[in-house]
Amino acid sequence: AKKELPEHFRGYKHVWVFVELERGVVHPVSWELLGAGRKLADQLKVDLAAVVLGAPGEGTRNAIQEAFYHGADLAYLVEDPILSDYRNEPFSKAVTQLVNTHKPEILLLGATTLGRDLAGSVATTLLTGLTADCTELAVDGDGSLAATRPTFGGSLLCTIYTLNYRPQMATVRPRQLPTPARDATRTGRVVEFKPDLDEDKIITKLLKFIPDRESAKSNLAFADVVVAGGLGLQSAENYQLVRNLASVLGAEFGGSRPLVQKGWITSDRQIGQTGKTIRPKLYIAAGISGAIQHRVGVEGADCIVAINTDKNAPIFDFAHVGIVTDAIRLLPALTEAFRQRLSPENADRLAG
Amino acid sequence: MKILVCIKQVPDSAQIRVHPVTNTIMRQGVPTIINPYDLFSLEEALKLRDKFGGEVTVLTMGPPMAENALRKTLAIGADRAILLTDRFFAGADTLATTYALAQAIRKIQKTWGDLDLVFTGKQTIDGDTAQVGPGVAKRLDLLQLTYVSKIVEADAEKREVVIERRAEGGTQVLKTKMPCLIAMLEGTNEVRRGSISDSLRAARAEIITWSAKDAEIEDLTKCGLKGSPTIVKKVFAPTPRTERAAFVEPGKTAGESADAILEAIFKRHPALKEDMTKLASGF
Ligand SMILES: Cc1cc2nc3c(=O)[nH]c(=O)nc-3n(C[C@H](O)[C@H](O)[C@H](O)COP(=O)(O)OP(=O)(O)OC[C@H]3O[C@@H](n4cnc5c(N)ncnc54)[C@H](O)[C@@H]3O)c2cc1C
Ligand SMILES: Cc1cc2nc3c(=O)[nH]c(=O)nc-3n(C[C@H](O)[C@H](O)[C@H](O)COP(=O)(O)OP(=O)(O)OC[C@H]3O[C@@H](n4cnc5c(N)ncnc54)[C@H](O)[C@@H]3O)c2cc1C
Image 1: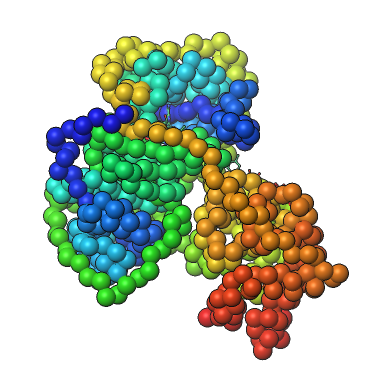
Image 2: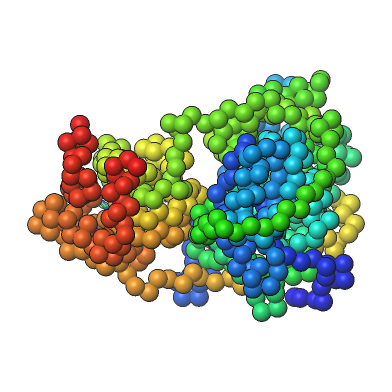
């Protein structure tokens, strides 16, 4: 239960978002967090600050600019060549020192490989609470952060508080929250911070960075249209029907978890609780039953279309448009209908 | 090489059911398993031991029945298993968990000598926070390597480790010093079955059981619910969408059905048509 906040925590104010900048590129979850942070800061009537760590250069300056466009009032900037690639030692040191100096009441990070690696270290050093993988953030009546996360594979939700410690920390999965509108007229102030960092004292060295092959990258999480298949397709050959439709739509393709286990698709194309969360404008699910672990990954879609032979399949409880029919028969027709409707003049070329 | 592996016993989530009326979790009769992610770390630890000699100790904090999970790790090939169990640990969040685990690891080093490597799983399938590895590393001042897809080199003489680590958009190749903490990525190795002699040994082996006192954990206010800064305020079921899908009647032919679906989509989201036309033509 809530006690009177200890004296030494009373000066902790403002909402901070860690902007995940790596190799000059910002992870888009940072903007999603700024959108959520903006609402929290407005409710608490405090500032929203972006925390930007990176090597000196254009990438870092751009990140700050974009942070303002996405809602930050100010940016704490730590600029040092040591920070060009993520390593736990210098990043956790810099963030911890920054928190101890400027004292935020809320600190949010993305639940990415970087964010999860960093958040656990920072929270343990600060001896504060950290709520993982939140799907919703709110401020309750007395100004505490109410962080809600799924439990037991999404079948239940729980709301977690860090009442008596500061900062209140949380991580949020990419694509769980909407990206705020970008407003290029916004500006903010930059506060530079120089933590005590020394390359000679950092033991872990980066020998090499091997970028993923462009062709191997799936852009599922950020695609506008996603077509997915499930076990109802019955064979890897039939799964090709999903790829055909995706190709005509310029969409990404994915599937339910069993398809990964069967080897029909690679694991980076799994959608759901233990795969990717997606927020497309249109999601077409063929032969997917709509188990809760799948549902939590797709509920952010604007329009969900479900094709299933079972009218009682749970997917119809959260789809917007449904049809009870055989997906294996319907998919080729759907592909053809879209082809004609969307780009009649290209029909011949696409057919080739 | 002296290696420690942290494991957690978890409910087999594939079999968890939520009570349809009360919305509480029905744990009764749900079998428990070793957290599947921990097995990839255990396997990597055993591989290193087989190559360099030394021993693999397995540690878990949990209720007395977590002994079963530990016994399984002995059957797979671990050398020693320690169960940290005490009512003071109940209700621990990750900060309190890492306090107890770190204290126990200190005691392990005092008893059997300094560790070269500590392994944890990537995350669990129940709490699923991925916070315990980084927390333990921080408390013991170990260098930390998470999401490791490959141990390229581990040199006990030079006390150096080179690993490959999954990062956003690529793979980092990192070099660091022992002692360090490693969390393996799933699917990075083939977990062994364990030999018949190991399973015979495991059946009779003693599981070392430590209370808080045995592990020389002095500050009980840092353990369990008391030592947890996070407070679970409420657990609830997601509000179901009230409206079901608008059903499209299947036509006589698949083509008619397809046209009907397109109609329904564009009626619902008129803006989609323009967006999709652009997308389809490759812009
Ligand atoms: C810890 C945990 C994590 C999980 N994480 C995920 C996750 O991230 N993502 C995920 O997807 N799942 C996940 N799962 C699995 C999930 O619980 C379901 O088992 C899975 O989503 C089911 O996949 P499916 O819908 O393809 O198959 P099924 O449930 O077998 O459904 C097949 C559907 O196809 C329909 N069908 C059959 N034939 C046809 C046809 N010819 N045309 C049209 N429809 C047809 C059937 O009516 C049925 O509804 C997880 C499970 C656990 C325990
Ligand atoms: C539904 C639910 C939600 C929760 N949410 C949060 C939260 O947001 N924040 C929070 O601080 N706590 C949370 N907790 C509490 C947390 O689950 C426990 O503290 C748990 O003991 C450890 O966390 P984890 O299961 O997430 O482990 P993870 O951090 O995911 O585990 C990583 C690795 O650490 C090792 N490990 C984990 N637990 C143990 C153990 N007991 N013994 C030995 N090794 C271990 C394993 O190798 C494991 O693979 C939650 C618990 C539940 C049931």
